[in-house]
Image 1 (cartoon, helix red, strand yellow):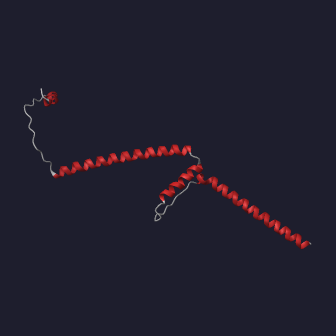
Image 2 (tube, rainbow, N blue to C red; image 1 turned 60 degrees about the vertical axis):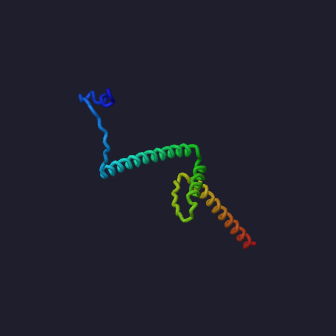
Image 3 (cartoon, rainbow, N blue to C red; image 1 turned 180 degrees about the vertical axis):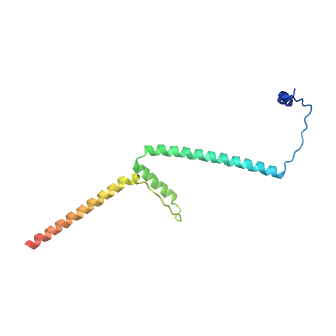
Length: 135
């Protein structure tokens, strides 16, 4: 019993001979097959790329959980430095407010302290000038 007989015995067909011929596909059929193969390669490429992006996102999320806000901010600045190597590029970078909230509060407290110092100096100077005019 041959391989062909094993494959066709359930069909109720008896194969008596097999001839192999050189079959030339039409150009249209070749193009269709090539387009299908290209589409399949693109599909695999997209799947592999998206899996890589997903892995990178998971790794980034784990890194964010381990980093403090300032460390994350420094990492962001480092990334900006890497990106801005070419000076012909313009980078617009939005920073979430919760990321820099501590710095903003610190700067506003610093500004308030500076304002209070100036007010105190102004009061002292006006007090001293008032005392000078009374004498």
